[in-house]
Length: 451
Image 1 (cartoon, one colour):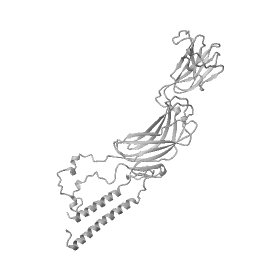
Image 2 (tube, one colour):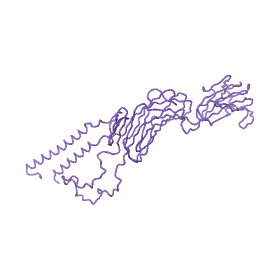
Image 3 (spheres, rainbow, N blue to C red):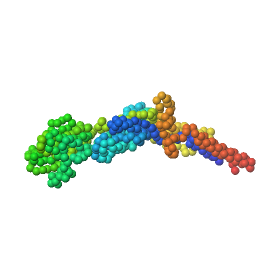
Image 4 (cartoon, one colour):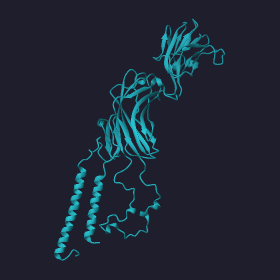
């Protein structure tokens, strides 16, 4: 092959490579769809809690893969979710974000996140989770539309027991109760203090949220009977002069569970102990409050969050795969017996002498990553494109190009970089061609081109 011919082929391949580089667009990894929520009720109390969610949606999904959505959550403004009552360490705040999927995958995709809380008091600010996640297995190719829906915020109390001492601020005493703050060690009272009254109808009251409680007092000779009331049930009567087997006691024994009930539905309850016998003392050492493990979060603590902006609808195309499914041994290009001398570059007049040897899987543009943002009332093209586009929702969608600076915006489509690269490639090809022509003319001048 002549040097002229080889140089011309090299210049042609260089130009083709430059052209293919120009044709490849920048590709975005994810959309950040911004959704604003307004939350009311439940642990929001009487306030309105504003949240901002950024939903990260992948731009490339293949059939058989996973569609994974990541959520980041932040507060807007000063109001916060607050604890509805006293709770031991271990309560959880849980968020559930919902996205409706239509098309090749129908249903609602839930995103979950939770944050464990420390010991709580009423109106103490709660810490919600900062992120949520969800995923769905893409079993078939096609177009899927993703539309954000409402969000819910739940408060899940911890399971367990909490002892509330008789001098706790939560206790309410009516009439003639008195505090004995230094009881004898041998009595075994909880924290060595008790409240006592010997006046009929005197009451001690505690309000709590949970599923049960225990009345802790003293077993001792000469004590008066006690009526234990839970909500509107006043049927329980306790005789502290007898032990748990019903036998009369001869000693003073403190910190004893005199009565309990643990089958209450979770919620707000009021427990009372009331003196029945005038002139005989009754003792209140503490209340032990119970909360059993809850299967479902209590609905009374749930805050419902509605969307306050117009985030639009994201539409993605799930690709059907990246390569052919035929047996690779049937590909004629893999036949080692092909004549290696059949180099298509030997004949510049026939750039493709054997079309049957061209593999169908070589594409100029990547497939399976069509993403558009559709705002209600707008229209979209059915032609897939590798570059995400936004319609009427620029402020709500952030596009981050792969390998680019994370400025929150992708390069403007149709920018002049492609034209500059293509122009430079043409100038390079022209320079090579001009140099070859000049070399040929000089060779002819001294006696031929084959010197």
